[in-house]
Amino acid sequence: MKRIILLMMFFSHSLFCFAQNSEAQDSTGITNYNTNIIWTKNIGDTLIHLTAGGNKIFASAADGKVFCFDLNGNLLWQYNSHKKIISSPLDYNGNLILAALSGDLISLNDSTGDVVQSIGLDEPLTAPLVNFGTNYNGQQTEAVLAGSSIGSIFCYDINSFEMLWENQSAKGEILSAPLEINHKIIYTSVDGFLYCVDSRSGMLIWKWSPEKDNKISFAECSPVSDGKSVFICTPAGSLFSIDLMLGTTNWENNSYNCYPSLSISENKEFLLLKSRNDYFYFVNTKNGRERKRLSLNYGEDNSIAQLLVFNGNVLFGTQIGNLYLIGKTFNWTMLFSTPNSQVQSLVYVADNTFAAVNSSGDLILFRLK
Image 1 (cartoon, helix red, strand yellow):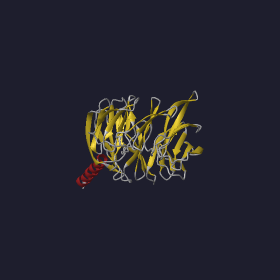
Image 2: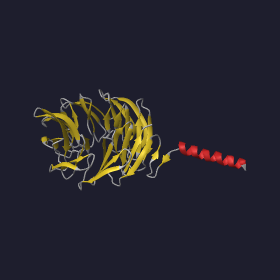
Image 3: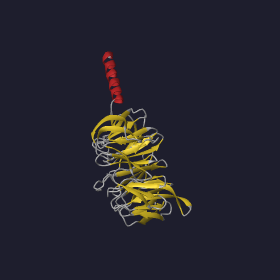
Image 4: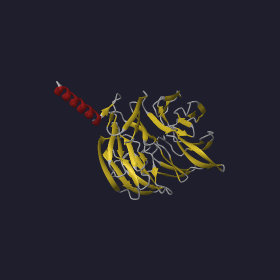
């Protein structure tokens, strides 16, 4: 009898150890491989964008709802704009700013969800909101950029919502996040051009296209810069370097099949590219040559993956729901998987903690080991 009890105890312990060391799957279907998942919430909406600030996580859904959670997973407030929102919000100095397809720019108190102010821009707002410091009428101020479905880009004082300038050079929808660098705003449009305007006046400096007949659109790829050049990917998979001052082509490389996921290392020496099939590349910004290629075996992937760069590491998701971490020494690991649910948005929260949301509406707070 004692022997039977001991065997039962042994097998129970073995099963416990196996459970501890194997992949852990929670009720949402998330398979955890190599991270600490703190909590998950299903918001119930799709096309969700995340932002974070002040130990709070904000999730805005396409149907106009906005959710605010604390780091313990408690819902602090919920706001319904009753307006379709397809661009990511912006949290700045205690205010959460939303851009709606109705053309409304809305500022909420990020602690209560109460409306602070709103204005109508009369054009559907489609691009992620971006803020930057600028000089207006001799005063230093903080500005917010909003891009529209017909190609306008608006610059407003972020606190008063006073218009600083607008530019209507583009003739097509602006979908990706504009880039502010060296007193210049760089952005793409569905019309097939990359635009550069003065961040203080909104005046057009130059525009660039990879093809003379202008039949290509690379509007879903957000441009990046090292301060001297601008880098962009095209749907054909070509990677371009454009002179930031002149708007002329420095080099082109067709080897990486990288559209539209592009970022840049913190030291500005390497471009970071997720290819459409299995590979992740580190590319020299000076000449476009491959520095390192990693085979991650995620298969064919045409999703717009947000590449989150932090402390020499890269975090990104795929359309089949895998979340990867690439380390400083090019080592990589899959952190978790949300099967058949594309990772749509990633944000850094605090203290090695991040939030992700997938196309099934699962909001996941996790901490790296």
